[in-house]
Length: 189
Image 1: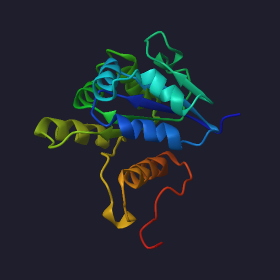
Image 2 (image 1 turned 90 degrees about the horizontal axis):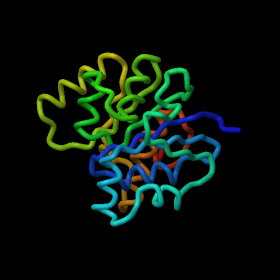
Image 3 (image 1 turned 30 degrees about the vertical axis):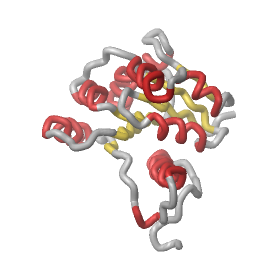
Image 4 (image 1 turned 120 degrees about the vertical axis):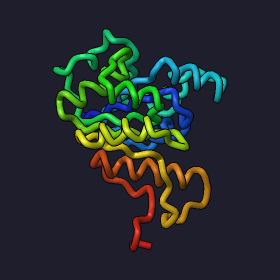
């Protein structure tokens, strides 16, 4: 029986490897509901020359569901999950959530997190940040959304891409309340 249910949204921002690493490192006793946007599918084909769902299913099949339609139970606030992380969060997805636009399942899940007061973490993947994106992030942060761009802490003794991804996923797990030992904490090494 799953200990908790986490929604992982994957939008069309360039950072797909981090999403796949999140899936790989998530403990198997946690139920994972993946919500890829249409642009996430397109980006996977462009960057990896592969199908996103097949990439996900190569990593994990236990306690995993992929949802991509507004007919999904996730489109209803009465369907329960504890938290949602959108990784990466594209500037378009961020803007839609900030302005209440629910034009796909991913932005609908974001709206449900807001109205049901569930944890929502946005791994905004954009640089540099325009004033409009900063305003949208500030707006969401002021109502309790955790805006957490994937920014590396160099104190964690990063040696390679894998250890960098472990650090970032560990920080996201901290925000989700998921125990881990993916990186050395400040003062512990």
